[in-house]
Amino acid sequence: MKESYGVRLPGLELDDLVGKLIVLEGTDGVGRSTQIRLLKEWLEQQGHAVLDTGLTRSGLVGKGIKRAKEGHTLGRITLSLFYATDFADRLENEIVPALRAGFVVLTDRYIYSLMARSMVRGLDPVWVRNIHRFAPKPDAIFYLRVSVDELIPRAVFTRGFDYWESGMDLYSAEDMYDSFRKYQTALLQQFDQLAEEFTFNVIDAAPEPRVIFEQLKAGIDRILTPPVARAAVTIPTTPPPPAAVEEVVVEEAPEERRKRA
Amino acid sequence: MKRYGDHRIPGRLFVVEGIDGSGKSTQLMLLHQWLKAEGYGVVFSEWNSSPLVKDTTKRGKKKQLLTPATFSLIHATDFADRTERNIIPLLKAGAVVLCDRYIYTAFARDASRGMEPEWIRELYAFAVRPTVAFYFRVPLEVAMKRINDARAGFKYYEAGMDLGLSDDPDESFRLFQGRILEEYDKMIPEFGLTVIDATLPIETQQQEMRLMVLAKLTQAKQLRVAP
Image (cartoon, rainbow over all chains, first blue to last red; front, top):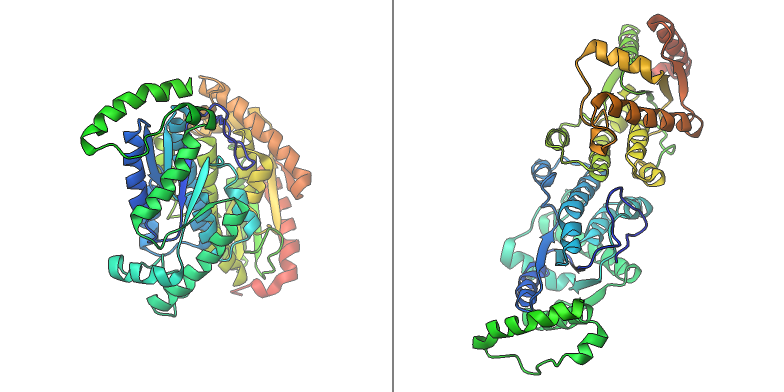
C-alpha cells in the first residue's frame, strides 16, 4: 500500500507492501543514530521486526563511494548520481523486500538528505527532485532539527570537523570552522524548505536524547496502531518493571497478529 | 548546472550511436585518425569508462547485481563523471571531443529495460548537446552476423539476458536489440540524429562523416593546435 513520488521502477511493485517505512532526517551530528538504536530496541520489544538502514551502505556501490570520496575528486553531479544509485540498490534489495515481509523499516536519512546536499551544491532543484522520484513515500518523516549554534559544540567535542560535513569541497579557501558554519546553515535552510514540501514531523533536537525518544515513540505509535485497534487495546499507563519485559512481549505478540488480520 | 542545449563553449562534440555491430566504433576511430593528422586537438571518450565508477559497474555486471534502475543510474554516474571532469573542461578549452556512445545509448537501453523515458531524459539533462550525433543504422541481422564473426557469443547485459526475454542468448539478443532499434528510430526526429547507412562500404560512410564534420570545423578554425 505504498506509492512512489511519481516514477515506477520496472519489476518493483509497491502496492503490496504491508510494512511501515519510517524516516529519520536531520543534519550531521544531530543524534539520529542514537535514536535509531533506541527505537529499534523499543520496537522489537513490542514485537515488531525492524530493519535499520542508512545512506551509503549498499552492496553495489557503498565501497565505490567511500573510495571516491577519499580522493575528494568527485564532481557534484557525479556525487549526486552515485548516491542515487546507492539508494536505488538499497531500496530494491533491502527496503522493499523488508516492507513486503511486514517489517518496520527505520532509515537513518532518506532522499531528503540527498536532495538537500545536492541543492546546497547548486544543482538544479527540478533535476534533483526528478532523480529521486522513484522513492516510496514514507509512512512518517521525523526531522530532528537543531540550529547551527547548537550543532557546532557537538561537532567540535565529539568527532571534529569532517571534510564533507563541512562542505570543504564548496568553500575550500576557508578554514573548517567557517566552512562548517556556512555549509550547515545552507543545509538547514534547504531542510526547512523540504520540511514544508514533504510534510516532515519537526522535532526539536536540542533537549536530552530521552525527551526526543519519547516524542518519536508517540509519533510512531500513531502509525503502527490504527485508531480502531488502539481503542480496543488497553495500554498500560505505567511502564512495566524490567523483570516483566519478556512476559509483556510474549503477551503482545498475539495482539499484534490479531490487529494485522 | 547548465542544461542540455544551454552550454556555450568553443569546442566541438561529435558522438556516434548505434547498436553493437553497427560499425560505429570503427568509423569513430577513422575520424579520430584523420582529425589528428589534420592537426586538431582531439580527445576521445568512451561510454562507461570513468575510472571512479568503472569498477562498480564492472562488479555489478559480473555478479549480475544490476536491475534496470541501478543499471541506468550507474551509467548516468559514469557519464556525469566524464562530463564534469573531461568533456566540459575540454570543450571549454576548445578541443574536439569524440564520444563512442552518448546519452542516446542510455535512452535506448533504459527504455528497453522498462524505465520511464521522461525520467531518463531528465536524468541526463546536464549533458552537453553534441555538435553532430551520428546514428549508424543497420538491420539487426547484419549486426548479429558482424558480432558473431568477430567473437564467440553475446554478453549477458548486451543480450538483455537480465530481462528474461529468452533463455537462448541469440534469441534474447535479437529481441532486446530489436527494442533498442525501435527506440533509436524514435530519437532520430526527437534529437535530430544524423543517420548514416551502416550497410554501405566503410570508406563511403567515412567520407560522409568527414564532410559533415569538416563543415562544423571550418566555422571554428581556432581549434587547430598544430599546423
